[in-house]
Length: 424
Ligand code: AMP
Ligand code: GLY
Image (cartoon, rainbow, N blue to C red):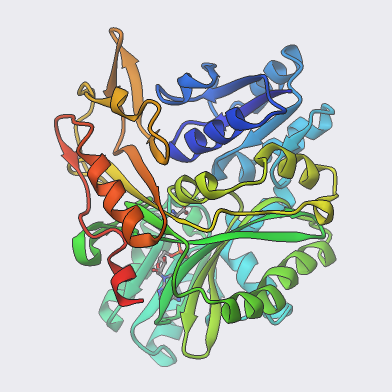
């Protein structure tokens, strides 16, 4: 098979690595890719939002399967463009990617189909949002821009003043652009967060092993929200009992709800869950692999990823046995100091060769490129260092050891990825 992957981050590197392992694949292209992905794939200089050019390329090269890694092209309808041309593509159509693309849509869906989530109201008029905050809100309260906002459109407000400022930021100043035309105001929940990614073929859902992300930039969950500074898998807090509850009350009902709405979902549903005292509730849905969740989940997957994706596209996921290793993995993100606000890039990265032929250790590139024959930093998140171990503690030790194998100017990481493991 010839495979095309759309995207350029650590998640797409993990997808490319997994595709390269597949017995079915003999050629991989990635658009636009990065310097790490180039180890397995021919990188093609086409942007992820250039749907027609990407489809032209897929037709020209007779690509057998295109895998969309990122949310923006999915929400923008890339899958529809490929399908119209008869090209096989893994990911939800535009009318299903809205599950991630509109938080107001996803909240209304959960309400209609009794899927557990935080209580909420949707607003498209800032005056009404302010009136609601003044009369009915309990604090802390959560404000969410409806649309895609690079994972930054969520504000947790402790006081009425903060919440009023938040409404102004999201709905009036349009800090997140048109994503803030509509806003969700939601009850604040407490508990442990877990990410569960799943394969879906429109009817059947097969959840993958669980993971937990660390979204804040600094140790102790301080600092600004980022795309994710590190992950571990599995989550020791995601018990068999919780898994059974989620399958029955959250996962299958979500897939059935989308089908009932005439929006059959094919691809990855990422369930962001909060394990509250009242049981697991949905924080958010994403319509793609998590980044850096993919970097701990895919290395533990035994089943051939390409076979699972083909089964999703062909509507026969029920025939697939999805199996994960009985071990653990931890990913520590090496970022450019200053991320997610302001940082410098273009620094050479030393020591990448240390990962060659090391079983159970992975250096996934998030923001790198070639410059004068060298690999240099090219983003806020630069590398995702993943290691496996027999259990979470061993995996964490291995991952932190391996963070010392590479160096670049401005290298920054959190030192407490997986700290929660000690409380399990
Ligand atoms: P989201 O993009 O919806 O996952 O939100 C980003 C982060 O904000 C989540 O990972 C949570 O840590 C936090 N968050 C979102 N919604 C809530 C909520 N209703 N209660 C508490 N924390 C929340
Ligand atoms: N790591 C969180 C996300 O990919 O949305």
